[in-house]
Image (cartoon, rainbow, N blue to C red; front, side, top):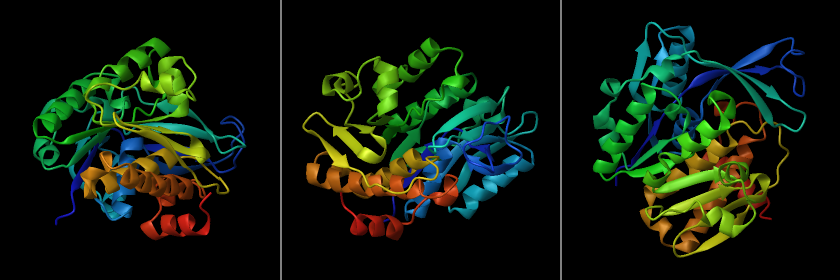
Length: 323
C-alpha cells in the first residue's frame, strides 16, 4: 500500500535563539538561526519518521525564505504547495531559552509573507490527495491568510480528508487574549482530531486542565479524538467511547522547542498508517506512547528540526525506560 500523504498548512519562519541558555534577549551576545514554525516542524517530523508529508505556505523571496524551503526539501518534505512573495519578508522570531528550557518569543512579522498567502495560491490538488490535513491557528490571525486557511480546510473536508488541529497558542501574535480565544475556537468544531497542551486547556476554558469535565467541555460532535499533552507526564486522550492517560518518558531536557510538533508528527504517522486506532483503545495507547517518546527525544537537544527523532531513536527510549 502506498504511504498516505499528510499535508501540513501554515507558517515556517526563522527562530533566532541565544547561543547561551538562560539569558534574556537583551543580555544575549549572539544568536543561532534555526528553522521554526509548528506546521513545518510537523511536516519534517512526519518525513523523518518514514511518513510522507507536504507543506503548504508562503515565504519571502529572500535568502531566509529560500533557505527554509531548502530545509524542507532536505528533510524529504514535498514543497509543491510552497510559494514566494516578492514584496514581503520571511517571518522572524527571537526566542529566549529560560533556565528550565522553556521559551519566550518576540516576533517580527508586519506583515510577513506567510500572512499574505491567498486562496488563489493554494495547491488544492495536493490537499485533495492527502489522507490527513494538519494546521494550527497562527494562520487565522489576519487576512488574506485566514481566508486561504478556511478554503484549504473546506477543500480537505469536501475531499473526505481527516482534519487535524493543533492550535499552538502564541498570544503575542494576536491583537488581544479575547481575539486569540475567539479565533482559535472559530474553527474548533470542524476538526476530526485536536491536540492541545494542558496550558492551552487552561487558557481556552479558564478552568483546571487536570479535571476531566473541564477538558470534556472542549469536545464537540464531530471530534473523533481530543489529545491533551502534559509535558513529561505524558498525555491524555478522550473519544466518545473511551478516555485515559499514557505516561511519558523522563529525559534530561535541554530545549522544549518542537517537542509538541514531534509528538503530533509521530501520532499522525501512526494514524495515517491505520485509521482504526481512533476506535481501538489498545492501538491508540501504543500510538500515543510512541508519540510521547518522540516528543521526549526532541527535548534532549537544541532546536526543533535538528532534534526530531527517527523511529529507532524513539524505540530505544521506549525500551530503555518505560515508566
